[in-house]
Amino acid sequence: MPANPKYLAQSKWQRFAKITAGFIGGFGVSAAIHIVLAIWFDRSIVLITSSFSSFLLWSVLFVVAYIPRNGWRVWAIYLSIILLCGAIVLLHQ
Image (tube, rainbow, N blue to C red):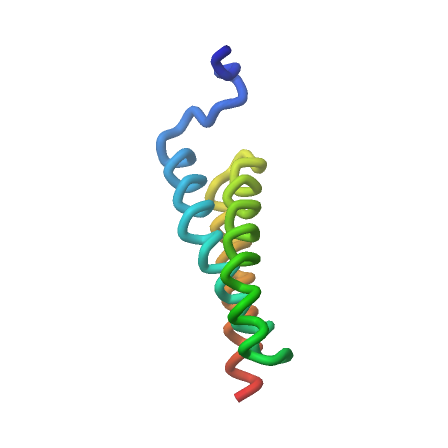
């Protein structure tokens, strides 16, 4: 059964933004969160658990990117999380 067209993104740019935000942005957010976790906890433990938990977090973030109507808003949220984690890493050094 095909999806109802009224729930699909009409603009190709919105579809592109959601796909790239889910794929690239989700990976960036999951990597940034695990880097911050490596600061606070033992790095070897975070490295071992991140091989599994980063994939799970990435897949959840990929699906979450399709919930809002505006894909660029998802990009803004994901980039702000990445920048916040980067600021935490820089302040810690």
